[in-house]
Amino acid sequence: MPRPSLSKNASQRRGKTLAKKTVSKAASTVKAVQNTVKQVKEAAQYSEMSGLNPLGVESVQDELPEFQPADYRVKDPLNPPDSLPQVSLGEFIKASRIYEGATRAVQLTGKAFDLTRERLLVEGKKAKTFSAGVQAATAYEKVKSDLTDYQIQLQNNQQKGIELGTAKLRTTTAQSIATETEKELSEKLAQAQVGAELAQLQTQEKQTKLAEFRLQLTPHV
Image 1 (cartoon, rainbow, N blue to C red):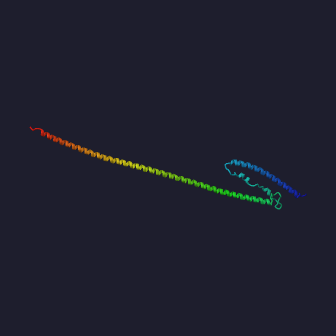
Image 2: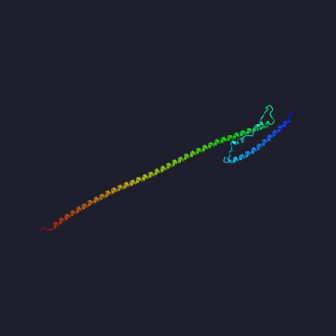
């Protein structure tokens, strides 16, 4: 039985490879459309998480690069099939540079996120510290207000104490005046009584003299 020619085998392999690539591209297109629809639904569902890409276990596979292990399957290590995916050295170097540059870019982006995380943590600490300062200032103002109320009450009490002392002094003065007035009136009363008694004695003395004088005027029988 004649063996098939190498050119025919190569043509068949290229045809199979082209068919696989066509099917793979079609599947990729369908998957891309499905992913787009899914992302739109998830974006609508998680619209409140602005700036964040929703990620669930079921969508992890969609984040992975496309990879078909069957395309790299080799049965005879000494006779690898022509259908294996291949790139030229120039394409490899170019793609490697792109991946290396993209890796550096995403690493720098990660550092930016690290810096932003630390900055936000510090901002949070700053806000908490500011809040503690506001609370301390509020407590200080409350104490200051209490101290002011105390000083006002103290002054009110002192003023009332002065008023009480003045009232007591007025009472004492009034009592002293009343006592002295009572003494003065008592003295005047005593003097009036003495004067009345003296006048009475004088009247009696004059009456006695008048009676004696009348007796002298009366003729003796």
